[in-house]
Every structure is written in structure tokens, then in C-alpha cells.
Amino acid sequence: MRLRVLALAAVAALWSGHSSAATHRLAPGVGNPTFAVRPPVLTVKPGDVVESESLWGEWYEKAGGKWPGEVGPIAIEGAEAGDTLVVEVLKVRPNRDTAVSTQGGSFGALVPDEGTAMLNEAFPKGRYVWRIDRQAMTGSVDLPGSATKTVTVPLRPMLGRVAVAPEGDEQFGGLWPGPFGGNMDVSDVREGTTVYLPVFHPGALFYFGDGHALQGDGEVCGSGLETSMEVAFRFGLLKKKAIDWPRLEDAEHLMVAGSARPLSDALRIAFVNLVQWLVSDYGFSRTDAYQLVSQVAVIRVGNMVDPLYTVVAKFPKRHLPKSTPVSQP
Image 1: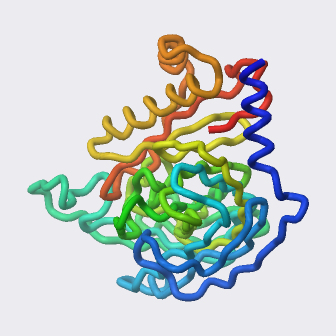
Image 2: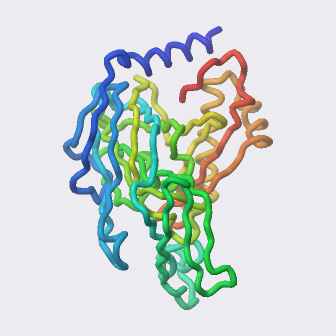
Image 3: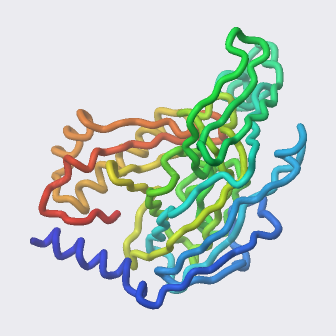
């Protein structure tokens, strides 16, 4: 009964204000190169929907072009340090007919980088331009050096970067993930997923960007099918509900994203926080949660290319107790 009351109270806190919710259209301007505290470009209330798009720039149009940066920050009224920001991802759809994937040099999981120096010669740099069919939701690319000259694959659009302003006076470049979210490159950040982020500053200060029409686990070559996206989010708040690392939820899984190097530490962060979530909100003992997670959880490697690697620990919701009607972080 106590679990049910707590869950219903959390739902009430999350959805209060929806009766007067507004929809905002944000036309992004100059992109930001860092996740940091700065004046918001838009302020919304809990329950409001924001429709916008990620930025397009010369990086997509020519080799060596400048990255356009991220959109934001968006402030949510009433958000304070110690709250949890709730971001329902309502829409992520490509709005261009091409996507770019680069590889080689000193960026990627299978080439030497600053943190993993090797004597190997650098892998040749490559730039693949994929053709996007937005009606069929497929991507096609030419493979001139292979027996299969052209391949077409189904798309699964996602956002590589969702973040709040990091704790204190910290500023992180756009490539960094961390407790604030950031460049996690987790393919579960897509339509139908709810993202939970810790709040460190008034307004939370939400950023987004880095649309991928498709990305395999690990983002091994260093990029997905990079393109711009039409997006829509609904924002909410869980007041006085603090979390340590980003959490995600969709119809099938509870998820926690941990970012660190080495990869094993990212995995530990994700699983420790997943166990803690099950204990605090779903009535499991710590020992029982540890056992169950060890047998039924699924691991996704978001990225193994960024300054910190990201691992997602996923728990199937079918194993949650039936007495808890709605999950909250």
C-alpha cells in the first residue's frame, strides 16, 4: 500500500499543471559548444510541450566543417537543485534527406586515441553520406569497395545529446557525457522514452542535439548516421526527488546510464544505480535486487568513443511488483 501511495503522489506531482499546459515552438539560433549555466533561450512550465529541431551546419556539408552545437538551454519553472527533470521524448524524426557518418583518424573505438595510445598506423579517414528516405524510414549508402555495392537499412532515430547544466560552475564540451546527461549516445533516447535527469541549478537548463537517424551499440566508428531532427518534448518535475545519474524508461525497461573510463566502471555505475532504484521505489531488498538484476538485466553500450564511455543497464518492467502501478525514479 505504501508503494502505491508514493507512486500515485509522484504521478500527481509530475502531471499537475497539465490542464493549463502550453505548446511552444522554439526556432533554434546559435548553438552552444558546452553544457553550462547560461541564460535560457526559453522558459516553460511543467507539463508544457516544446517543439523544435536540432541544428544543421557545415559539419554535415563538408569534411572538416564546424560542429553546429546544441540547442538550449530551456528553463523549467520551479526546478531546483535536488529535483529530477522529467523529459518525455514525443518526437524524433529526421528532417533532411542525407546523414553523414565519419570514421578513422584518432576517433573511434577501434583506433588509437589520446587515452589509448598505440603504435598502429592511423586508420584511413572516411566520410559516408547516407541517403535518407523519410517516408519509408530507411537509409541507403554506397559501399564502392565491397561486393555489396549498396545497402539499405531501417532507421531508428535518436538523440545523442540530452543534458542539464552540470553541477557547480563546471562546463563540459559537447563530446562529454556525465551525471548531467550530455553526449551519452544512447540509442534508447528516442520517441516513446522518458528521460530523467538530476537538477543542479534553478530551471534545470536543458540542452539537446546530435540527432542520429541510426546508430549501432557502442557507436564504434565514432559517429552514427548524423543528421538534424524535428523534435518534441514534454517537461515535468519530480520535486525533492534527487537522482545521481540519468535514468530512462520506455514501455519495456527501466534503464540507468553510467559514464566513465574504463568501460567496466561505467557498467558498475549503471548497475549500482539500477539496483538502488529498484530498492528505493519498487520494494526490493538490496540482496534480492542484486540477484534478480544479475539474471534478467540487459546491457547496452551507448558509446565507447567519447571522453567517457557510456553503459546502460536495462531492467525488464515485467519483473516489477504488480502492486506498483506506475514507475518513477
